[in-house]
Every structure is written in structure tokens, then in C-alpha cells.
Image (cartoon, rainbow, N blue to C red):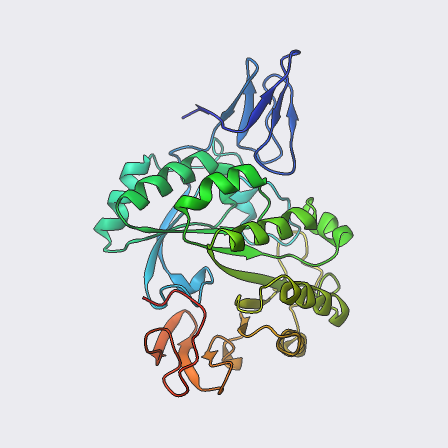
Length: 336
């Protein structure tokens, strides 16, 4: 289903500039953007990613990962094909690096997505798996309907979206997990085909608009796992008011175009956690190494174990009204 895309600038020569994300593709007639989802037809930009998700499933919300937002609940998760990054380490490259027209997909209107979530007895919907920015119109319409039903919406994103469309979405968005790939612009370009600074702007915009936020950093040996880079990233986060924002360091496994890289050593993840905590970040997690029990939530004041997790499952939740049940410290998050 082709629909006129939002955020476009039509040129006199028939080309169209897409204004949705910082790639700002300038498209000739019949040309498709870097994201594989937006096409110039007769001088108008159309989205090919509307009502045609290639993946729809129920997940634990911890899988996003979101640890401080309705823990233990299930969330309806969906994606269309396409992405505005070309990450060398993409785990979902089969769907992210394809056009919606190339893959088998469902036909589901925004109303049908809402009905599906309700049929599974969840009030939570996640835009995830690929990059939600590239199916912006679909995400936006679902989010508007969800809020009319007093449901919650979550965006799991690379953060590569322009400020205006993000601001338009924020009134209908409740939470986000942003993937902060690294903290060096040259490395960002090499790894993703994007730039660092628009992602940092997205983090600030979400925080300014009171969207619950968590950040994920996948540590890739030789790219973004140096103590210096991690230290700079954590210092920036604390200086810009993100000390209460949960930070997830995840283990990398060889995949896609980075099969020559080893999996992230355990010591690198432990070092990153130590650096982040020393910088002042209160909630630091380690993912993809279950035996470390790095998914548990502790009180930053008295170190009491508050939320015990095994993988994506919440085993124990000792929070009382969003506070530590021992010392009464308020724990940042949306707990009820």
C-alpha cells in the first residue's frame, strides 16, 4: 500500500528531498531512498511501508530491552522491512536491508494492530526489530489510536530521525530504547553509514519530552569497546542529565559483515559497567551473558536487590510504589 509520505520537499525539477531522517535523501523519479521504503513517484514521495509488517509477535518487554518500564509484562511487537542504517553488525539484516515489497508480509491496518494487542490482553505496543523511523506514518497512526485506547507505545530505534517528526510523534510515545552505537563520529560512519550527533539530539529530545528512555550499547571488539570511548560516552550522558537513564551494555556475537570479529569478552562488559557506574550512571546492565546476572536491578542507594531477572523473565519484584522496599529510595522508571 503506497501512501504519500510526510516530511518531504518537492523540487521544481521533479526530484524530492526526504526530510524524515538525517540521511535527507534526494530522490530522482522512481528512485528509492537509502532506507528501501520511500520512493519518488511523479515528483511526490510515497512510503512503501504502511500496513505491511513483515514481523508481528508477542515479546516480554525485557527483550526490547526495557527494564524500568512495566517489567514482567508482554508487548505486541511489529516491524516492516527497511532501515536507514546499513550496520555491518546487523542481527536482522534479512529484513532491515530489504524493501517491504521484497519480503512476505501481513496486511494489517492500524486498527487491526490495536485489536490484535487487545486480543492478546496487552496494552503495550512496540515498534522494533528493524528501524521504526522508516515506517513512520504507520507507527504514528498506530500510536495515535493506541493513546485513544489508553494503551502505551514503545519505539526501539537507532535514534536517526529528524527533530520535527520526532516532536510530532512524542505526544503519542511513552517509552523508547535508543541504540547508541559508539561515541566517535568516524566510527559511527564506518559502522552504520550514519553520524553520532543526530542520535545524541534524539536522546535529548526524548528526555525533554518526558519519554521514558533506556539506552543500549552493543560492545564490538575493536570498534567501540575501548575504555576511553566508553568513558567519554558515559561522561556525556551524566553531564547531559542521563544519570537516571538505564544503560544496557550488550555482548556482540559475530554476524552479517562482522563475522571476523570475536564475541565480546566478558571482561570488556564488566569493565564497561564499572566505568559507567564510576561516571555516575545509576542503573547499568549487561546483556547476552546470563551467568553474570547482569540483568538484575539494584537500589543505587543501599544496593538492595529490587528486581531479579533470569533472561527476559522477572523472578522477583521487590519495589513498593516505585521505591526501594528497604531504604525508600525512589527508583527511576514506570513501574505500574
